[in-house]
Image (cartoon, rainbow, N blue to C red; front, side, top):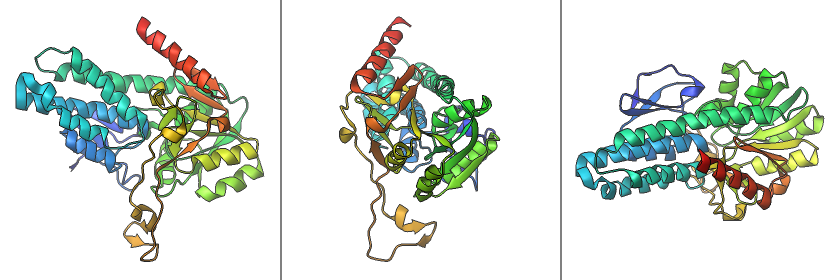
Length: 360
């Protein structure tokens, strides 16, 4: 249910654990209305993810981690020491909420790994600590990506971004927008052109709101206007996030990203993907194996309560597309930068990440 705001409404407060409940800033209504949705069950959390209350792969992962806490709390209340058996249905609901976002599955698996190590007592304190850690780590990772990505922007320029990969889409600060924030602070970004991002208009509603909130000059353009902008010059980078990166460096991101990458390559504009290592799926060999979510055609055929398309006409509504690795100039993660990504380079990055984790 929607509640009075328990906390200040800022882009960094997209997901908040407060007094035993999960609060999600309801992104379906921004910027017209800012309100939190209060959730107290895994089922409600899964529905909120599916319904786009929260979106963006890292933010979905953070939300899913809190959803696991709610699932375990309810299972322990029902079944006591048998809570592990009772929790499976709720975990399946969370896993099914969005099929493409890798961070969703990564977060659930990390929480399940902790479950296996817990004793028979109340699992909630330990699981909540882990969910809070996932949230904190994501914020820190975004800051690290911001610095690494900003260092690649050698001189002041304008940039294009697609969809929303900011604080609203993460645990805070942002992936693509984290790079943009850091580069702007360093004096290297003059203006951001935000694609409107049909059909949910995340660029218009969310990215523009975030950047304006931070005092960063932003101009919204229709998705189809990007080509003429790049042709006119003055754009140094296209900077986007990702919902899943395959082992060979292929990138799944919001529909329209692939076309933007083709345009960038044609016009000599560099293309940067900023995403945490939790977005990289080493079990998926290439982008061809990434499941692409399809949503209701009415999201394309309608605007608000008004139908735009004629009756009897259908619509394609894939949520994501795959940009081949050869069109990506650089992948920026919290663990390092991969230029011209390949299977070998991604494997080396993830090997370093795994070794670092084992030592910590």
